[in-house]
Image (cartoon, rainbow, N blue to C red; front, side, top):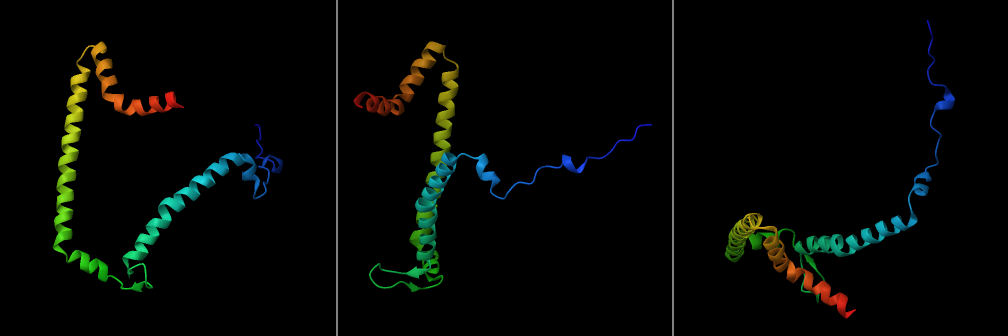
Length: 141
């Protein structure tokens, strides 16, 4: 009968320093990640936070802002113009999404039943407005 031994202490993983993970990644990649994070912070997080802060203040951009708590929201929810605009937006969005998706699916179905020569021609015509600015930019450069 053979006796198997457990792992010896020398088989354990080597202890790494806390900063060892930095050596695994490229500094260029870290630079890109940092710059994109900074861009996201400046372009999205700070304006969003400022909008939240402004929604709880009354500020005319000349005098100091006055904290009004939820009075701005109470005024908004009590305004009939807000509810009319919201309902119009919801109706327009629902109808527009339904119509756009229906037309896109019908166009795709019609294109799928054509011969390949006609498919490619119609797809080229359909995508021409998207492709043309890039072509013009390359030619003018």
